[in-house]
Length: 165
Image (cartoon, rainbow, N blue to C red):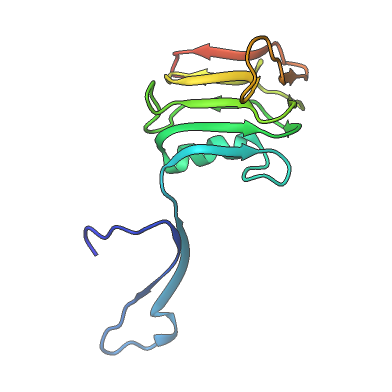
């Protein structure tokens, strides 16, 4: 199966092995399900009953499938995160194939709980990330996206650094 290109979708793979004199043919086959996703590009929604329920889920998906073009995560309504979010290690992310986190409606990202780090969102060692608090189509001083970071260690809303820690 060298060089097989799969399109986006759900797949089932079965591996079978047999040899002469096999005393237990019941264990000669294994089957697994897997999903192939195309690199992300375009607009994707985050919030209750949206494409992604949390920002963490969207960032994890970006890390898993890479960035294929500019990506905008539109936050729809309030989103609750139970731990800090680190944006790093996303293949394909750069100033051309950028990531924008923006308000799709008046929204709040609540990051609370027992925070192990002093930030809510950390942008670490990547280029092309924008957090835009305005709703698409509105201009000026629109502040429709709020970031609340609470907890014992919560000190910074957004931390931007280039460290490898």
